[in-house]
Image (cartoon, rainbow, N blue to C red; front, top):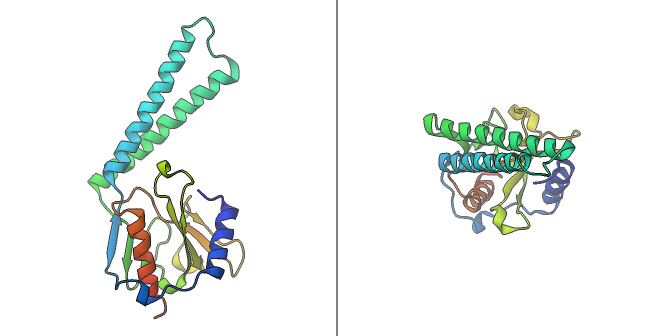
Length: 203
């Protein structure tokens, strides 16, 4: 994942270097709704809880040994177990919410890109100045994330959260990271964003 400064620099560079997508290079897009994937969220939450239990078991065995963990080494492991367990519970609750009350996390239409977790109003395609696919260096960590550079993002009702880094100065871009663990794979989501920009961004 980008650091805030690296993200701003990367999307700014992308805005300067990327040609606007050509409609001839992209099929006519259709409206798309991407939901939080309940199965991915629940699986990830359960994995985190199992990992926390494993750390707890290691601590239990250590306390019963002749040379138990002590001092900061002990507290570091306790903190890691608690943190991972807490994260697992949060992710698991999001997965349950996705089952009980499914809501589109990303929606695309000719009118713009709607991401309720980042902006309260849809962003017109013409205002998405840059699109960067942030790929992890190691493929085992997944397909990466999609980072967008948004012009004058304050007009669209910014929502505070880790997925949005507001512009640092007038004329710069908001840096928005699309949600992960969706029902639509990242490559298809990326292609849909570029197709919508190509066909509706210059309208």
